[in-house]
Length: 343
Ligand code: NAD
Ligand code: IPM
Ligand code: MN
Image 1 (spheres, protein in one colour):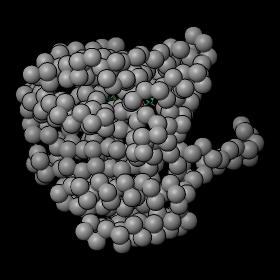
Image 2 (cartoon, helix red, strand yellow):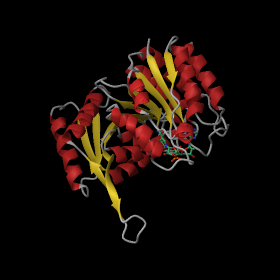
Image 3 (cartoon, helix red, strand yellow):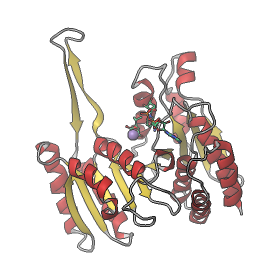
């Protein structure tokens, strides 16, 4: 039976993860879930972010379900880098998979787009780029202060994520991959991405390709999200574009993600695209759908396609039944989704 590590984390993390767990229990009776107390509270209590012993224990699980990390009482980066990014890097989760679709019944902000018309997936590189942590600062707190933040791009890292995007596109109906970068300005990394993309594309004549600069892609995601199938991009561009994709398909409360180590050498991690939402934490009003859809991605990754399909069907029914303007209660949504998934 699957062994899942659960890192509920901060803010709305525990609220939404509790619903995802209900759903997992409903579709996979007997699933073993172990809670790990990591995040702001532990840091305040002990000063620890992610002890090596905990990292080693997490490595022994089949997958990780994570809520969100980050809290206004903790300096920025301590938890985001020390916990979330550390997990993505330590477990070599180089495919950050972020699907976006406009579900029937969901009123997106774009009048021009009908349900069913948007069905895209961003394959965001997860271990390199500006997230690598290279850089530094000089003359801190003086008028001469200088700060650099370097983007790390390796042929190995770029090629493997582009290969994943093409393989994924080959299994989809439209078979199209869009590379998003900024080759007109970032001439070093951009050239590496473009040349690698072209080389991999040559091996996949059945997959259509296009290239867009990231600023144009940000615009087209809002004006014509229908045009995308698979989008492959670097870590920071992918972070930003997936919040836009979420916004145009009904909001961040619906956006799921998987941080995947495709080789299975390490556990993959599944988490909503959203953060800890301190502005609504503790009120019981966070939408748990993103966390529940992340659990569905987890199920798919572990080979439980039928269970994942039941969760997706429950989400479809939930979203189709919503009345705009009616405030939802996190637990009630979780109960409905669990009941529907189990049936
Ligand atoms: P956020 O995603 O937490 O919140 C942005 C806005 O979206 C807020 O108004 C929030 O209320 C709303 N929102 C988010 N999730 C929602 C949900 N499920 N239902 C309804 N509304 C929802 O982003 P932020 O405010 O920029 O970041 C807050 C903290 O979370 C920061 O510490 C940040 O570093 C962290 N963060 C963590 C993750 C993660 O753990 N994967 C992701 C993003 C941000
Ligand atoms: C996300 C978040 C993270 C990221 C932060 C919290 C490190 O924004 O998962 O999208 O930038 O990847
Ligand atoms: Mn983000």
